[in-house]
Image 1 (cartoon, rainbow, N blue to C red):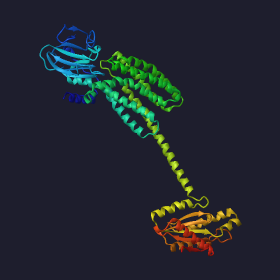
Image 2 (image 1 turned 90 degrees about the horizontal axis):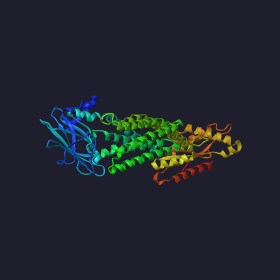
Image 3 (image 1 turned 180 degrees about the horizontal axis):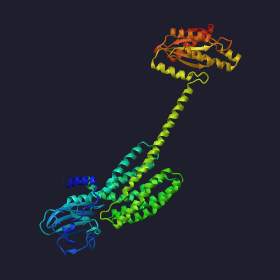
Image 4 (image 1 turned 180 degrees about the vertical axis):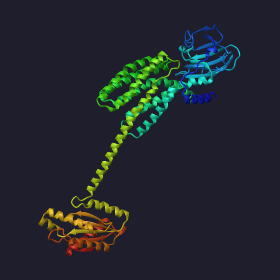
Length: 545
């Protein structure tokens, strides 16, 4: 129920963007100094400074802390604090009011980092609040973060207002990741670069979510999220520089690769020391931030040099990389200087700079696809022209023998009825020998134009070879085809194909007999009919017998 209340309050608060945290009322209820002892009922209570390690000797993992509470402000009944690598048990007087975590070693990553919200029961007189702490390492004993006593509403403000920076950047990271994913799925270029950019956006989104407080309500796995938030700092620099490496020329890739290797070594060192319980994610931060300051200066110089040589994409990726480097170093300064009580990372803000880069990549893809489409259109046009030329007789413009054979095979396969007419110009060899081949070519061209004026709609005209031509007559009998052939013969004889000389043509007609027929059979009958027409005196039509 408390989680639901906090969630509703968070939505209310974020809708109004409350800019100022309410005053803390803990001075009205906490009284005196914090005290500690190492056993629950043994030894004297000793004062110590709040939020500092308890001075213990040896390998101690448990401590008892207490502070006096006065019922001065009734509405300040909610305790808020954070722990890292600790299990906690809270008593008010002799009554246990809260417990979280296992009071035993949790290998290899410990208890993780989380915040606690504890509602104090009503009490009428001064009493001690006692905290029993189990820490993964003695160095963590007695260290809490953001310890305040206040009302539930005000504590909710503290929790969710620290998430404000992450809330305004996380949706952008997710949205950019989804947009870029769609871009990657539809892009055939820069495959490795696209994978690195997508990995960087995904890593940024997951890491930003791990920094939020609201994650504890949605997915309460403090160990996992503590690992992600701690180790994510070490993964971001090498992944970001992998993007740069894919964009620079071969001359500079070795420099970027060495940079990635250095970041990788630091990440491995942090991971190993964290696994062995030495707080490697915290301890190696100084090394990481020092490397950021040095190495990103080198990377920036490399990008600048490559961009000066005409690398357009580097001009766009340079802005996100520089901003990431600057904000990463700023996070390092804030991490150690503690300018405010609740540490907030600024690096997620760099996600906004990726908008320019993403627009550039999408624009490049659009231009590339337009270029491919234009090339495809041009190629299709060239293919169409080439096919047309392959099926067209160059001299007469008629479809050639290859086109006829492909056409007639389709008609036979479709089961259509048809008739064929083969035409042969009479004494054409004599025309070539007497008047020359140029004159013969002119006769062929004029002959084709004459035939085209005679043919009814639906008929097809092909040059079979030399002075031989074929007419396809759809859905016609051999008698109808013979009548058309006779008409052709009369028009050719009447046309002036050669000055001062009458040109005639002979024709042979055959009809397709259906499935019982063959392509070779109809060709043979048509050729035999033409042979009979030429032997019978030419300038006549003969049908198959």
